[in-house]
Structures are given as C-alpha cells and as structure tokens.
Length: 257
Image (cartoon, rainbow, N blue to C red):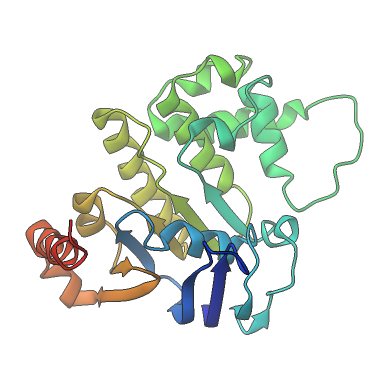
C-alpha cells in the first residue's frame, strides 16, 4: 500500500510568489488498484507523482510504501521498486543503444552493474518473446538503435522495460499525451494488458477523460492540491465522460475561466 500522510509542499518559499500546493494532503492507494488521476493544469497531479518517486522533497509529512517510511529515501533507491513511464517517449530509453542493449540494462535494474564484455546473447531470444506480443515488429529489430524508432514504439518499449523487474508501483505520467491518437490507443491497450497480467498497483495521470473512465478501477480528480472526486468499483463504472467533464466545467466557472 502507498500512503501520502499529511503532506505539505511549498513552492518559492519566502518570496512574494510563495505558494502552498499541498496543505495537509492525504492519499492512499491499496495493493492492486489501478488509479486514473485527472485534473486541470496546476492541480498537483504531476507534483504528487514526483513526491512519490522522490523527484521533489516535501516540506512536511511522510511517504510510506507497505508501512515503510521512505520520505528521506533518495530517488534512485526508490526507483528500484517503482517503474515510471514519462510523457516524453525519449525519457524511458537510451537512443544511442540498441533494443537489445536497452532491454539488458532494464533487466538489470536494482542489481549491480558489473563490467562485462557485452550483452548476454542467451537472453536475446527471451527479449524477442517479450516484444512479440506488442505487435510492433520490434522483435525483428533487436540490433536497431532505439533512437531510430517511432515515438509510439519507444513508449511501448519504455512500458515493457519499466515492468521487467519486480516492483511495488507503476507510475504512468501522461504517457500517451505525446502520441498520435492511433498510437495512443495501442499503448493504452498495452498498458491495461500489462497491468492486469502482472497484477500491478498503478497510478496513471492523464488528460484524456475517456481513458480515465475506461481504464483502471479507481478515478481521482484533483484541483488546487486537493482531491475533489474519488470513485472506485461500481461507482466508477457508473460514471461517464460527461460526468467528469461537467465537474471540470463547474470548477472552471468557479475559478473565473
């Protein structure tokens, strides 16, 4: 279980631009949940992910995973048990290395990187079998540099690579936002498949309301550092895009937009 407990986060403290984004913010994600998080720009969605991953510090409060306080744990150590896929397809892979080399590095996540003479060729066929279900032809491009792949192919690879080792959480940070509609659909279907097959606990931030409704078993909406909607199970299934869009519109009117 993930828990954000009594979180306070200030930006630009001690200046005229000081802003308190999170004030006594509390959030829990149970094991096995697939949470879709929506909200307007500046609502705190990405900041929440960054706090979970350790990319930014909190001013007060605690971050706990399975009861362990990881608030002061550095980002690189947290990422041994957290997989993260970013909005930019280029951030999850090394473009100057081949598909084979990228997957070999991903499989070694959390282990010591001892110097060796090269990639273990015995694993090449295993990597091919991992890539084959993506139906993107990547299994036949093992020695092609990742930088020459399309954005959709790289994002699919990022998702696969982030889940190659055991983990506590999968973090999806607007991971379809930079893709064209068709490629985004393919990556969302792949995401759903991977999450279900590996029984992952996942948090997905998205601006696509249809994805938020169709995927996952819990829907959260954030606004100004607060959770204003939290639906799960049957309550989530009974919602549609219009319900979420109407709430967005109400918020916009209240904010003078």
